[in-house]
Amino acid sequence: MKTINDKIDKKAIDELFVSIPTGTVVLRDDRTKERWSVGINSFELSKFPITQELYKSVTDQDPSSFKGDRLPVETVSWAEAVIFCNGLSEFLGRDKYYAIDVSAEKVTFNSKANGFRLPTEAEWQYACQAGRKDIRYGELKEIAWFKDNSSNQPQEVGQKKPNRWGLYDMLGNVWEWCSDSYDETVYGTYRVFRGGGWCDQERSVMATTRRRSHPFSFKIDDLGFRIATNS
Image (tube, rainbow, N blue to C red; front, side, top):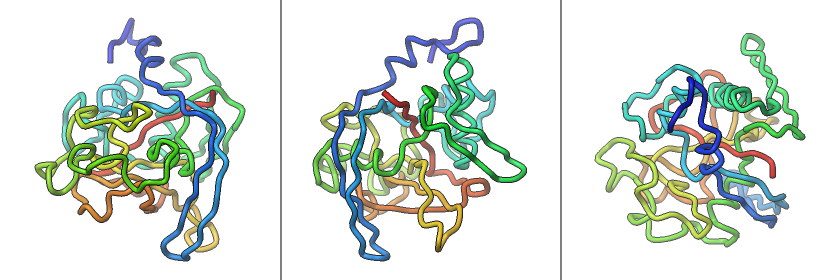
C-alpha cells in the first residue's frame, strides 16, 4: 500500500473495493437448526482481508504473530478492527461509522455514515457465495489456504482463485470478524466471525460456518478481518 506524506493513498483504497449488488441470502445456525432470509442492500467490500501493511499504515501497530506486509493482519480483536475502520475513515475525511468506548466496552453505530466498517455476517456470506447457495465457490485447494496446504501459517493475500465477484481469500487464510452479535440472549456481546482459517480442517472452511467470541478480549493468530462501506 503506497502512502503519501504519511497519509493513505486514496486511489489505492478505492481500487481495493468491489461493488456487491443487491440480493438475498439464507443464513443458518447449526446449533439451533434455524434458517432465516436476509435482504442485502448494495455495498462495497474489500477484495482482500486487511493486510499488515495497511493496518500498520493506519494504526502504527503490527500485532500479528506471523510477520509480512502482504500477509493478512491477525491477532486483532473485534474492537481493534473497529478502531482501524474509524482510523481509515478519519484519514480519508469520511464520517466515522462507530463510536467506541473501550473502557466501558461499548460500541454504537451510525448506519448512515460513509466511513468504513465491518460487514454484517449476512453481507459477508452473500458476498462469499457471490449470490449463489453453494458452501464453497470452487475446489477448496484452489480457493483457500487451510490445514492441508497452508504450511501451518497464514499466506499472502490474493494468491488463490477469487470468487465470481472478484473477492479473494473469503474462505481460509484467516477467519474474518463481522459486525453482528452472535446471539445476545445466550452469548451477550460475543461477535461473529466467518470463513475458516489456515489451521482449520476442510470441514470447517465453508461459507456457512459460524463462530463467535468476545469483541474486546479475544484475539488469535488465525483471525483477521476485511472492511466494507455503504454504497
